[in-house]
Amino acid sequence: MTRRTGTEAKQSNAKATALKVGIVGCAGRMGQMLVRAVAANDHCLVVGGSERPGAAVIGKDIGLAAGIDPLGIGITADAADLFTQADAVLEFTSPAATIQHAEFAAKKKKIHVIGTTGFESAQLAALGRAAKQTAIVLAPNMSLGVNLLLQLVERVAHALDADWDIEILEMHHRGKVDAPSGTALALGRAAAAGRRTDLDAVAKRARDGVTGARKRGDVGFAVLRGGDVVGDHRVVFATEGERIELGHVATSREIYARGALRAALWAQGRPPGLYSMADVLGLSG
Image (cartoon, rainbow, N blue to C red; front, side, top):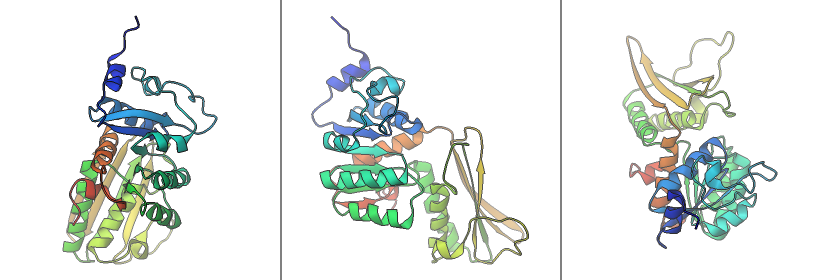
C-alpha cells in the first residue's frame, strides 16, 4: 500500500467547505510561495495551477514544483479551466495576462486576487469592468505592513503643507521589470490623496542632468535595482531643519502570499466589486 504524504492527506481530507484555490503562474517565485501557503492552510485546498503554454513544468506535480510534497495535481497550460475548477484564483503575473484572466473570472463569477503590478490606465479600466461581474481584490502590495504604511503616508501628507517635500525611494531585486514599483506608486497616490491632488499632476519620476530646482509640491521617485532584494520602500517628508521618514522592509515574499490568501478568504460571499487590501484589512473608510 502506498503511504500518502502529510500534504496529500491534508488535501484529500479537506472539508467540502474549504475554499478551492488555483494559482496562475504557479511555478514562478511568487507562484511557488502561493502554492505553499494554500497547501498549509486548513481552510483552503489547492485545486490547480497554470503556467504559460510550452513551459517546461507543464504536467509536473504542482507540489513538487513548489518544493513541497506532491499534491497529485499536474500543472496545466489552460488558465481558463483553472477558473472553472477554483472558487478563487491568485495571480502575480504580467498586466496583459492578468487582464485576460480577469475576463475569465468575470465570466465564471470567481474570486480573483491580483498582486500583479505595472498596469496602464486602460488596463485598470478593464479590471474595473470585470469587477462588475465578480469580486476582484487588486493590490500592488499584499502585506499588512505596507497597507498600514499607505494609511500613515496619506495622514502625514494631509497634515503637512507643500513646504514639506515628498520623496519616495524603493529598491527591488535585479529581475523586477517595472519601475517605479507598484507599491512606490501606491505610496505616491496616498501622498497625493493626502494633499488633495492627483499624483499624475505632481509626480517627478526621473531626474538626470541639470534639472533645475525642485518644484514645490512635487512627489519625487527614486528607483534602485540589485541583488535579491524583496522590497524596500521609504517615504521622506523633508523641510527646512527637519525630516520625517516612514518605511517598510520586506525580507520574505511569504508576507505577500499570506496577504493574498487572506484576501481570497475575505472575498468569499462578497458582492462584485474592485476591492483593495485596505478593504480586506478593515482600513478603508
